[in-house]
Image (cartoon, rainbow, N blue to C red; front, top):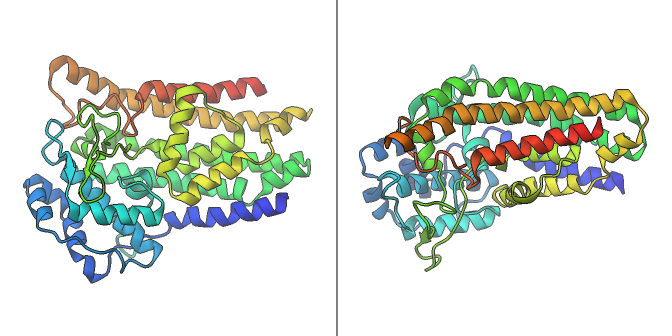
Length: 391
């Protein structure tokens, strides 16, 4: 049973890491209108000409999109175009209807990928990078207004994911941990936990690169908003030609990170009530193979129960060190969000003026729709509790 399970996890992981391989940067010529619009998005939004160009765009069939890479790029391009269209006039006058030329192909591409028709974390981070030159410096495939700070925001997020992937591959997907639990092999479990801990510490160090970026980040964040639990679009967004009723969808969120939810699943960290329900809902915004990997890991033999059953202080310490590294990462996230999002948002509400350029109405709420600090502190505290219970 465990060997079959390990084989399944490995296959799912291959699909997960495929999102971290260099992405497609162009589509067949039939979709030139999409790519021209997406590639010139910052300029078009600044000139307030996005809506006019989109209204003249034909409804294109998606039948020439054949490979997964082309479908991902199409979803990315259509997602950014959608965000630019909806929020071009700013947070006080969002568009309420997505034109047929955009809504119909976006919906079809989304169905083929098993994703919702909204810009997701997998789009803007995992599927949105390329090698810029022979030195292998990275750049975005498609960008938004905000210049270097917007570019840095997405690329640092990608680097954090890459740091996570190495630890998950060695510590989880190679099945060393699962095999070791099944075979009651504490030494192998210990080695796997050390790999995971090193990966989490590296993620935190890379996340520190976000500080100078968040200090300058302004309008980029506006185009990451959603149309669910949003006071600016309380009824949602109508997808013309798809549904006569408004559709409610969350925006991209770090809560859609497969890596973080994999760590939770392996370490037995179970988030309760609203936070747990929110994280489960965010799996609907992940590529299907990603959410299936998390669910499979959740069904594996309990690593935490095995460690608690062992009278092995070194193994217990390795487990606690791993959970502590995840707690530290989440604590650091709380401090960054407090400093660069919540405090400026409160200041904007007090003064009636946003010093971050856009989005003061939603700054205290996550792009996925959660109450930001409440959610982040809740998942941090649950992580800490898991460590204390295993002490």
